[in-house]
Length: 372
Image 1: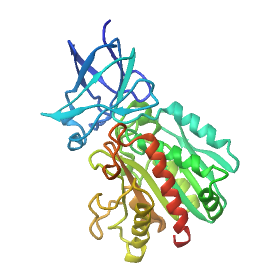
Image 2: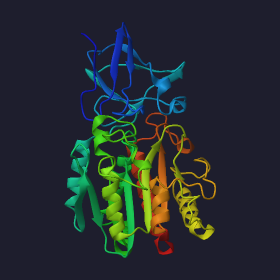
Image 3: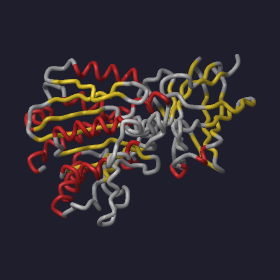
Image 4: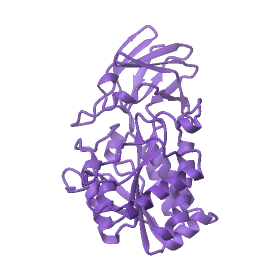
């Protein structure tokens, strides 16, 4: 049979360069109107019984090529379980080899989260008692921007995920958070629904998600550099969400992301904003300490460098919301590699573990909500 490579589906991304024997040469396609690329997602047919080596020839030009060393590609035969396969990076080429024993096999940068699954999630959660669904706006491609709200408390909590569409772990986390928050028997959910009103935007970038982008929307815009001055023509997604936040105010905010290089889960805060005080920042630091104590799936030793006083980038949501509302605001970063402090050699960081971390994040929030 002839080997066929295809990425013509929701979140698909790859370009076939050549097939020579058991070697398949590929390139990742850049985001539309942008130079960003790193996300890949494709399927292989006609290769059952063969061992193929895939080479991504332009990996060296990817947005975060420094993240390839130590990375392992994900594969699946059923699109449910995504395991890692041996991978290597050298001379600007990412390669991975797989013995294929099924008619179809799928490869991806991380376990994909499709727009169809997104709509299933939104519909399922919207039917839960006490949940209100709102379409905050539409994207440049005309897709809906969904927000799910629950709880009756005074403190306003905003959780939003997947500003960067290739960071699909963010929506796996959001799915876990929404399932926990709507569980009628969950003590954390009950407490949070009593003391807060929670607004969850599980996917901030539907266009980029469906197009197979790494980092940008349909206009090639990085949404997490638009929060100071979003516009309808460049960043309607941010404009719609920030307008909704202006209506409610924000006491606590969490922006859910993925990181290409650091093999661990970590938080980034709002050091460097003009209104920073040590007392204000201590609430963020205390949240991280409590989360690390609560689960082996989080740590506080590794992370990004802190911004120096007065140098915070207010176009980024975490900084903007902390400054704009006085919110205890943070970015959660999850790895494309693995959470090395609690490593899994078969699955690495995975959708199931995203959900476990989401539950721990909410438990931690519930434990200190009176202090926020």
